[in-house]
Length: 602
Ligand code: PMP
Image (cartoon, rainbow, N blue to C red):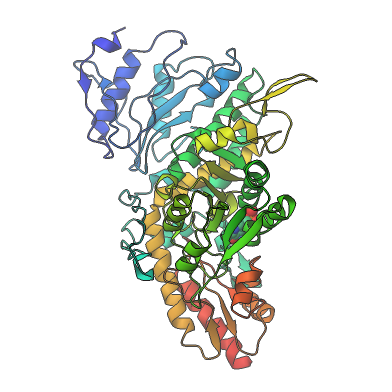
């Protein structure tokens, strides 16, 4: 067997480009030649990619006679080195005797990160040459039983694996706005919206969402209730099925194979969330039920420990009840004051008023990045910077922003960031709380129970570090894995392209709504994402919702759990179509046509 360290190296092309099939083949061949007879401990895969990260050199034999028949390489996912890997830290830390798992390790074009794909059939030994050939072949369109860990390629009898779709060009995160020198207009930087990428095609995306072919009352379903919850792509549905068919176990505790698989999948999903948010460490990601639980967790832990009588909590007038009630309750309990930054007639937070409400007693600011009622995109990075300058900690509610725009918690500099999986094409009952490591480290536990303790006696209890400290009991393991798949799916589309597509839909919707007499659009914010709210003169909103439903069009009609902001506009309820990646201009036409018919009949 050749010594891999003595082999010449082939430099893969500069990241994030993809190596060609020949390079991949050489790498695979090198790996086959280096295979030992038995399983052995090997170093963990290289650290996650960051700025300036380059793929490692890969040893290849001097005269590579292909061992592997040429394999069609999927465009967006390239296997670089094939790396056998023994249990990841999560399991190894818990129990060294757990059976080793093996992974294909590689890069995804959509994400500058190593990805590890579990190979469940090969748990007890390194793959032999024939098995590796099969695994490589499974990457071909013919597909096969390669199980993804936290997203990636899914085999399906009915659908093309989603990784085979060409990806739009990689996107970059916009820089955080800087503190304003002066007036209001400087606060929202002009949105440099990229055109929707050539690879972004909603008609192709729709095919990934089985429910979109449903007919309701004999009409094709037009799903415009995305702000309430999004539909799920096959990649998520099949990932959940795969979990329950191949991986299901409780995590972290047992010394058996399924526990290892389930733990791997769960921790890989945490890494997916980290990458999606651009957090610095997966230890900063706590799985919670959703945005609501994330906010309550911070209020009940950090809030109880750090906010006292006479202190102030500042929110904005745009907030969802989930970002009002926990702070109201905390303020009542500890004798603090809840202050609210007002909203102007367009539905924007009045930044000067926000600044005026910040003071030496402000301990915490909690604000939404996108309003679920009006669609207002707040200048969140600016407000965070202003709050920090006043010495306050800041939580950003990303429930309505994450499906619609790139998220970068480090650029945002929020101390905490919350979102819900079900609004970002993932399952219900799962979401994430991001918290800066030093802050999470100093926070007391939320709930007590299993998983979150280091040691228990009747006299003294010590706790795990974050994130385990905040994940008491058996969590929503499968749905966390499903969330990882959802984020991987969404990222593969390119968030900038998503934003551009949805922006065009919303502009179309607003423009056409303005042509319908009797329709009043609520708010005209400087920047809008996801949502348009309106009322129709003389017809109550519930009736509008009901009549639209008869045409197969699902929208929300009600107070959207944001009563204060609607009352700011003198309303108790609005009709709220909300958009997502799979919506089209045909959906807008269907909505406008139905509204016109309602107007005629009114
Ligand atoms: N914040 C905002 C802005 C929301 O739109 C929502 C859900 N509508 C929430 C928080 C709460 O999310 P969940 O119910 O998923 O916890």
